[in-house]
Length: 335
Ligand code: SF4
Ligand code: MG
Image (cartoon, rainbow, N blue to C red; front, side, top):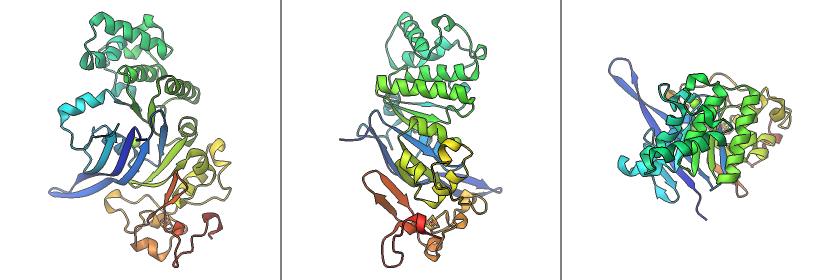
């Protein structure tokens, strides 16, 4: 069966101004491929600047992909004219870290929630208000609060309101970009539980972008790890967190303060060497080689191939290549 969302060889390149006249390409997303099934969730993790947000925004065409394919329900989105894109927008919504990016401070929350309905449906004003009331209660707020303004709510409540607005059009996919990162842990848990409930009831799919691994684990059964614009490892979250195969994933997990995640992963601490390279000058070969404790000569010159494990795991690293040069030893045995 065809996945709900299928992203193939996605590239996003920004032209960055350097000095007065110069421009240089910054490859924010590099040959990224993944898919999300209907009713499934995929987490995307990685440091800031790894291309997670750019990937999410490109899927919605909030930024333009420079090449690649994005299919939603089999329909190609890349290259689609804006007018046709509008129709698709009701199928895909985004929730940002800062609720004020989707909630207009001068509109009541009822108006904000109902706004997408006035753009995309022919519901009457009364019907839209009724629907906004229903959605507000769905996110566990009282419909008596419909006529209040965003400033009258806490950060967690505002994020619930953003979610109510995002589900107003009954989308198939919601992209959540650090949607709970600014909230305290108990508010995070409430919202994650709510999202899980909606998923079960409404059959939603989530692309859940976050740097907090513990949160990702509670919402996404599958995860992808990004580094410098590339997806370097994907697999079931449980497997990736317990037995990370990519050296970057290993370092990332061993640097996690959260005991719920890092205790299960290899006890061995794998340091991240040096600094994150400037993405304008991404290293040749494996872009992680400047920070990798395992780097081989080949890593400095040749881009690593993607090696798959079973049906749903993949890793982009020379250590996993079977062949005469590097007998594919499991990473745990490496120095
Ligand atoms: Fe490290 Fe080489 Fe694997 Fe890159 S390809 S992660 S440098 S071992
Ligand atoms: Mg980001």
